[in-house]
Figure 1 (tube, rainbow, N blue to C red):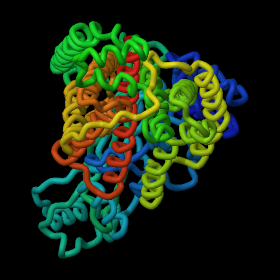
Figure 2: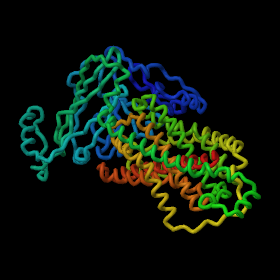
Figure 3: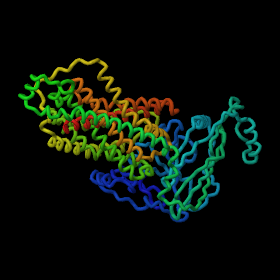
Figure 4: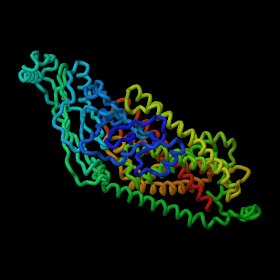
Length: 637
């Protein structure tokens, strides 16, 4: 969604006051709940028709939108198209700026029309001049550096992306003196002075070359654009005083391919639909079966037969103790199992945030599985923002319920902490990333307008919904526990100092086994400029298996802890499962140094800043799920 498009493809600018227009993604396939929420958050704005039809009349102009440029190895280090310093966008030519959705702003898009590229629907365009320019020393040096760093750029035609390199460079030397002589010989009549002399320090050295011609190949089906291709050619050496003449041409062909399948060519089924996906699912499924078997053994052979013994009265319990009962291990702490955990406010803040993120991820993946989010630019990011705002009521509910269940005080202050914790963490890393992007003048800089809209939506939707959820959760909180809590705390036996850390480290490694294969595909799509992740079904299946594994790990670790007569299971169940994020972060670091060629401060800050946010969210997600699994077992039994 790049704003409101008229039938001819020209950008119709929309007033910035319309929050609906800024927050929407393409209406086709977008969750109706999201649209309803946005209608509540802002005044409705109905744009002119033509955006979704993508229909054109014969010889109607088809706008070419320029987007961003950057080094190939650093996909998030992107700059405005004007950074190239070419003559295509210079002068008074009436460049239009495209409106951006929240998702497009977060992805670093900046759309500007290229009026000099005049492509008409269904009409062949012969070789046509775009502009001429002469490189001075500064522009030649800057352009040469970009070509040597493998700068690529991105264009859009009718919402279909095109990627191309700015130029090419070779290790083979170019005889600049012979080239200059050739230019003077063939252009003597046109330029009496001939080409400027080539500096001596460039003679015999390889020169980068810029592509000066673009050949567009477009396919249409009836009155709609189906495919777009572009082949750059006519590489011209770059040096001080070089005369560049940029040209373009376009041809049209008919195709029977339906409009609904036009984005399928951008997918990479050989990569993303590899058989290793099935291996990952089978691996996770077998691991899940093993852990389920372990939990079943614990429940059937150990817990169930002893359940009735802990429903006795105090007199019966004293009589049993006098009779020489065989209680040992976890059986000794039945009166302390539901004791209030240490640092309850901190625990509920982390737990509520994890529940909120878990539901957000499930909602986004559920809609992405049944909708072609990959075909709609910025739709996934936009849906995540909106889903986060909508599902905040769940975080408030769980936080308020658990806080009151364990007898916490100052619930209003804790409610505020729960509401702002994750936004504060994201804002801290976002400030560093955005400040760095501003210093580099990168397109990854999130505009102030987008920041303002997100803050307004947070204040209007997130805060009231979280408060409502907290109130509902406090009303639904359990007033009594299945087991009585003793007034006196039972002393915890001394354990080896490695017992708790070893359990956390070992437990976190098990769920990571479900993720590491799929993580490679996700990272390959996120940290690449032209790979689109679209196998959300695989991801959803892996996520479901991960949840089962996390719950089983939590139950097993909790049983081991209680068997050591340590009743502090709340934090242990959370940390054991949340430790998975530490392994994911280690894998992300490994991927950075071994599977990419990223470099530079901007790209490094963006990579590790966003990865840190992801791992924090994953840790909260797994930790909260682990606590839910362990606590439900106790309440059921």
